[in-house]
Image (cartoon, rainbow, N blue to C red; front, side):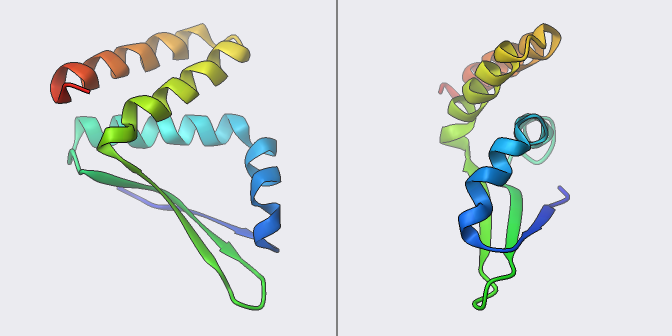
Length: 105
């Protein structure tokens, strides 16, 4: 599974970056969880890494553990409902159902 990287000037910019890129972020989370479920079925998946251009060159990795897949997909679902992407909502609901059946979550 390919990892996604972003570079930001400072760790304080992280929340603003995610807020400004909600559509990209929630699609990325959905895609990463789906790809894992349809493929390797890893216990923990790497979603993306942020590299900050601060003096420490801080790296922040976003990962999702299997026990949090449905929680994260529910957050994706809320976002897609908010932007009225109902086709995507249907896909997210289907993936949630499949994961709950497979893992008993």
